[in-house]
Every structure is written in structure tokens, then in C-alpha cells.
Image (cartoon, rainbow, N blue to C red; front, top):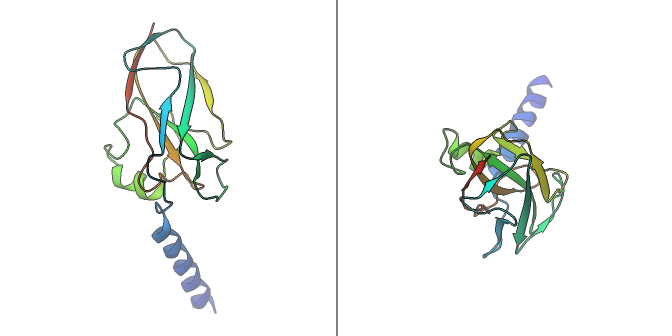
Length: 146
């Protein structure tokens, strides 16, 4: 009985992994910074407003077609180019100082960034924080906090 339960658990976990990263995004969907542009010089704290076209916003955990929730990548390589590039595309984004999650469906945030240059990229994630297929990402922008 223990073996059967263990086998079922492994089977369910494997099925879950196989479906990761497969939430489709419609053609033309895009995320963008509403109030910031590459090269902007700003004061701290920095308010960031997220824009989205072609899809809707839903809180994390909400499994609904053509929706997702926002993430900001801060001071790190573009999505898919970091040391864990393939994993983040297939299995989800971590939650740390460089990967800020907005699982409540938020569409703006105020960040307390230190003075200096910072890179920002928006990424839309599905109900499990996994980028859509194809990924819905903004361009990476660099801002200078004075």
C-alpha cells in the first residue's frame, strides 16, 4: 500500500511538471511600463505602473484563459538569459529581491531603489507564476535613481 501511494504521488508530481510552462498567450499580448522609459532619471521611491494589452490580470492561483499576473525582474539578466533561464521559463519564477511577484493582481508598485542604475523587466506569469507560452515580457529598461 505504501508503494502504491508513493507511486501515485510521484506520478502526480511528474504530471504537474510536464504541464508547467504550457499556459498559452494569445498572439500580440504585451506588457509594458506605463510611466517609465529606458534611460529615465527618477527619484526614490519609484512608482512603477504596469500596462497589459491582449490579456487580463487575475490573482495568482486563478486558472482562467488569457489571464496572468505581473512580476518585475530587477537588476538581473532578461527572462531566460540568467543562470536558471530554462527553469524559470518552464517551472516558474523565484520570489526574492530580483523577482518581485504581484500575485494579488496588482498593476502598480512603489519601489525603494538605492541611488544608481537599475534594470527592470515586466513578466506576466500564469496561475503558478510560470511565464506563458510564448512568454509575455517587456523590454528591459535601465533607469537611474538619483
